[in-house]
Image (cartoon, rainbow over all chains, first blue to last red; front, side, top):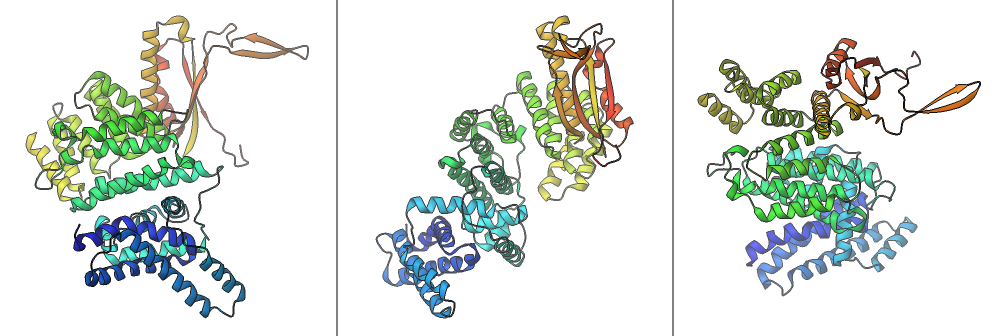
Length: 407
Length: 120
């Protein structure tokens, strides 16, 4: 790899490792210092490598420089805070304790950082932003692009979240065994939101969207690799993401328009990811806990079989029935009603759909339009028109326009 | 929003129906509950299997244990679900869809759940 592409590549893979280790070392209250030292390390690399050429082992070089910069910082800091005797001692102790950039400590630090960031004290959106920055090494402009907003907004959101975590004196460590299930739920929720941000985002930047999905899967895989967090629902979430991601190559045409599930060319579904998903779904079947991720992963598995059958839709319907009992969401309610129409026919589904009354939801009217198609064209038209007027993105508007034309 | 228990009383299905029929009832019950959950009105549900049921009563201050809840009555409690509803009428609408009502003589009792507010 040549220098121009090497540094961005290393930034993506190494920034998050160095920043997690340093932040763990300094404590969360000094997270900005950890971020500055890490960024500064990459700046030094860009300057030095440009002049002297790329060192034989670039990663080791980065770790070495980051360590030295951290040590220098602590020594300078010790001079400034001389009056506060205990702190000097603490700092000196820390200087003597090596900054540990071994694979093991890198993994531990990242995992602990995941729990620190996915803390109930800060809003979900801020958790995703911080995860992207600290755990995935995304640039501020990339995060802004993913959220369809500007850099200032993201910067403000991230610094508010960091302040909050400092106020709460969040420690960078794994929760105790008694708390781990509850806290893990939060981590999984954030990972899934991160994935959905990439999978459903209206951002036109296909590369970033794919990377968001990949990063979410990487974080989930890290949880699986650690014994303390290797729980069935984690495997279920990874399975779910594998099944969704398998359709990534097939869900967009050359013009960047979304191709709906029914219209996708299934030969473009990634079979390797489907098998990987099946492996993790099997692994998730251990134990007797049935999480929402188990149900969603099972639904997603059935969707990897393109062919319609009575069994397919009846099973999907029953999975949605159970999912909704665990956790209601409008999208699950709509999908459940669609499955009902496939399993038991449109008239029954229309009767159930009319009860949902999700009248501010474009997809509700899109579903009603679909259900009335072939049964009552006037009503189908009315509903597609409502869906069209509620649609916020060009892609969604186009999809409804097409439905109206085909009536 | 209040919470209501919908208490199902019916015959012991295993005594009157084939396994296929039981499976069909199971689907209908799951679809009924799923339909309520899809409206975000489902709170919880508990099935009460008839097998291994006991009744404890007393006679002359001594406990007497009998098998099954069925003395002279054919319909007994087979389970209940708790739903959210704005009024008892809305809860009754949910109850109307319960597949248990297909059996002659079966019933659903709709009962408001007491709030822990010191009034009830």
